[in-house]
Image (cartoon, rainbow, N blue to C red; front, side):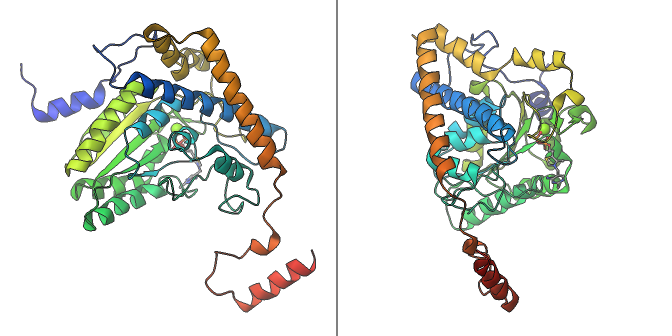
Length: 366
Ligand SMILES: Cc1ncc(C[n+]2csc(CCOP(=O)(O)OP(=O)(O)O)c2C)c(N)n1
Ligand SMILES: [Mg+2]
């Protein structure tokens, strides 16, 4: 029996799209990514994991501020970035360390930001995870969840008015889909067929709230139907499925055929941030089940089966990355905080008289 168009869309948003199985074999005849790209992606996913674990440890030692961990979500983050052109813009969320790394933000620049030292381009004013660099076309996020979605939609519309073939991609969590901003952005993008991609990293929790309490919908991808465009449900721990789904969505957007909602089904392996204890709201058994679906293990198994990748190559790469991360931490930590007189710079066009007074007092008191 032939399915109608709406039944087909329904089916797409219900099925879990997977290319790379947990045992490292392919469910498709071939990989959509070239071997070189996969090795590079694995390197960036491993770098994300190593750096992420280090940053959590640094916060515990009182050496840096609140940190929000990316561990477990590397395939969603790196895979989606692989599908964009350098000229496209990314509107990430706070958890997207992997996106920033895949987008080629130099480790030195990233580390200055994480420490909020005097060389940090935002002068230590925002959270370590408030990623944003113009050069790499990464929009600076704000703390209210989903507030960047509308900007991603408007940005793509503005680019289109200027005749530029720019696609924007915004990423956000399962919790963000309950916000008004999600609704407004999806609605607007659907009506105006905006060249944008909505990438939801469904990591099963919004802090301690499980996704079952977040929505009564069957899943998140199906929500796109209400706004008149397609949703795809993807195994978010499968680099190849995320890449392939994002590539289709980006090409569709660039053709002028409007937005797509991609739901990456993944899992947050650590706590929400360094300020909570996941053992209070999740079972160890649940976490262990997801650890078996670790996106890094899956990709490594594939590389071992399909190329000459092996234990010793993996250990060598891991050591290289650890050394690089440790060197950058030592360097960034030595840089003093931004000088007090930068407190008002880049904030106001003209300082109010009381700020001039405050600035003077601050400098006088050393
Ligand atoms: C508008 C708004 N409400 C509440 C918060 C507090 N808050 C910060 S993160 C978060 C959970 C978000 O969960 P989700 O969207 O699933 O993303 P995740 O952290 O799981 O990646 C909440 C409620 C906020 N930052 N902004
Ligand atoms: Mg979440």
